Amino acid sequence: MNRFYTLATAISISFSMGFFVHSHFSPSAKQKQEINLKENMKLGAFSVSLSVKNLEESKAFYEALGFEVFGGALESKYFIMKNENSLIGLFQGMFEGNILTFNPGWDENAQEIPEFDDIRKIQQKLKNQEIEIINPANEASSGPASFMLKDPDGNMILFDQHR
Image (cartoon, rainbow, N blue to C red; front, side, top):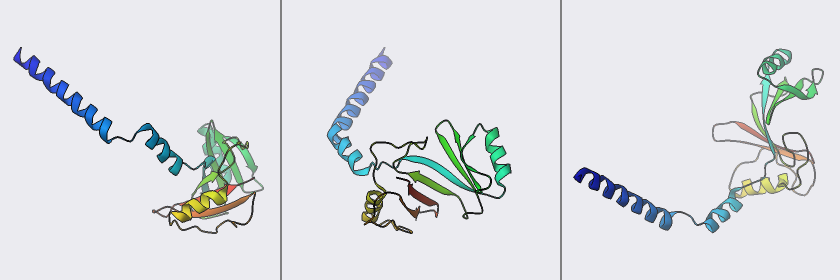
C-alpha cells in the first residue's frame, strides 16, 4: 500500500510541476501568433528540381513511383512530374546539382493562389536576416521574377514567381 501512495504522490507532484512550468514559461497564444506572423512566409508550391543524365530513363523511373507528367516535354529537355501533392522537376543539361524550388503565388497544381508573398517581399525579408541572395530580383519591378540562395550546406534554393 505504501508503494501505491508513493507512486500516486510522485505522479501528482510531477503533474503539478509540469503544469506550473508549462503555464509560466511557455509562450502564450498571443505570443505564438506573433511568432508565426514574424516567421511565416507564404512560399507557394514546393518542388525538387533534379538535374538528370537521361531524361527518358528518369521519367520512366518516377512513373514507376506513381508520378505522372504534369508539364514540360522531351524536346524541351524537362518534365514536371506530379504524384498527389508532390512535385518533381526533371531537367537534362540545364544546370548542375539539384535545386529546391518554391513558386510564390502558385499551388501544387500551378493554379494561382489568392494570397501570397511577392517574391520581392520574401527577398527583402531574407536580406534583412543577412542571407546572401544570388541573382536578386529587381526590387523596382513587379510580376514574374526569381532569385536564388544557398542553404548552409550549399544546397541551391530557387524562388520562382510566375505571376
